[in-house]
Length: 318
Ligand code: AKB
Image (cartoon, rainbow, N blue to C red; front, side, top):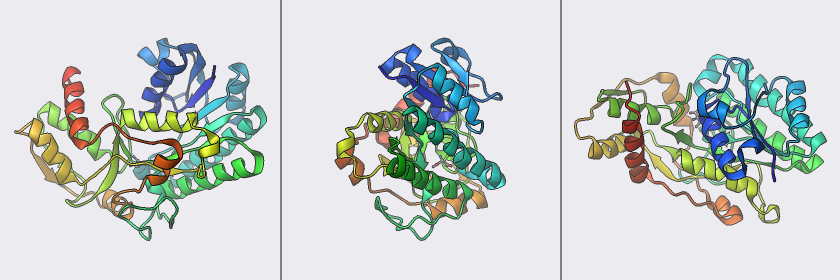
């Protein structure tokens, strides 16, 4: 049986991934690692063990790994793209110094490590349509710089020390549980909340701004399937392109309107978000993930929209 530490367990991905891992591996085998300012609450707190695990303090990570005999770490600590532009040094400290802390403990205690990268690891000189697995990565955002670095450092620890590091490049993740904060793709979550609350949505990105997106169940499945994959089949490690849908604001708007016909959207462009989005791919080619670990998403824009609206309606949003 595995013993898993989720670092960043109270964040957008962590809060759902921790619960999913508990379902699959048993509640007591999955530790929700949190930082002081964001303690777990409710089901996350009550369903299993939690521990202070601030990625910027190596001793803290070491103590948790030793105490709970951890063999797998999902390292989700990071600042998202827009907020990283206002705090570039902190973004590096959490994303890169933090990763070194995790990898050093992983090297000593033989842990596998998942540290997600992102579509943000690409830049304006990257081929934008069907972006290949191995291609130009010259991002100009600090978020992207940290993500390329985490890919390289993770591969380094695999090649040099044999640490079992694996990762995917996440697209924008859409969830009806925990809201994201400070990302460029957040609009694709916010739009559903406005629609279900019966409010007009003001979109911060221009028509025609395509980006890859993914529904949370597929994103969680990608992370867990990759960590479960047969290592002898993996040619790549850090990090795999994955994809399930690519759309622009007008596409998601039209899809929501099919379900909620009175929904309205207008535009008020945020220059920083637009600059970042324009530098990211329109769509990724995920052939390597399909071939090396049988990656296959379940949701498209249509099925995700039906599910999002149903789940948000059931929450009776104020
Ligand atoms: C962001 O928008 O910063 C993230 C991402 C795509 O990595 N959601």
